[in-house]
Image (cartoon, rainbow, N blue to C red; front, side, top):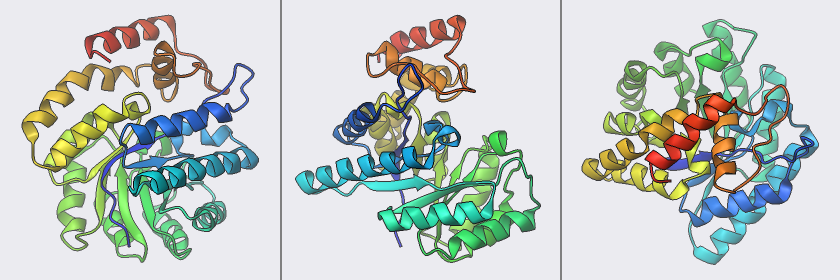
Length: 301
């Protein structure tokens, strides 16, 4: 069973002005990530606008991601983890998406807490029990802000006891809860990874015993995020702090008017893609654009 660590990018999905997927733009983005030294990629996560994608679009994105990663691995001899988003608020669909990830050869599947339904703790446990039986490593995605339901530490401990549960992407925003998971779950399962889902908490979480980040800002700056994450993991906290505080204004600005709208606008400022998103998302406001542009200059990005 793999142990996830390091910097992994929750990839955006580039789009054209007519809201169609820009597949060549996505291919270019994956190449930029690999050249930037990132440890892993996460297609079809929240940042990818996956709820608005068709399954045919998702299949093409998966195909491109694997083509580029396999070519890079062959040329460079470096393993890159591919974690595919496989979440749904319907357990049957989550199982099916995990089966798709397994068939594609993904290293792991990211499964979010069932959203909108607001299941009980027992329902959450049974949801993850079902996907764990697929036979692919599972990363639990805890993000109360989007799902309406927090996975508390006792429930996470039960889930971690299931086969094939290898990590949690922690985006609760609660560093105390994250430390509880490290103290409670990692003490029992040393290979269980606790990974930040918030760029601004990457350094604090690693300092407390965490394992890395699923980053949004690394869509734009994979090299800097990887450098900061690796410095923290290697115990070079001086260097990690310098990079953390240099990038902190952008960590905030990258979510000033939602995700992925804000990071897509930042990437458009740097000429990487158009800021296009698919409804119900819309382009960031003019005031948000100023905040993002100011942060890019302040952080020397």
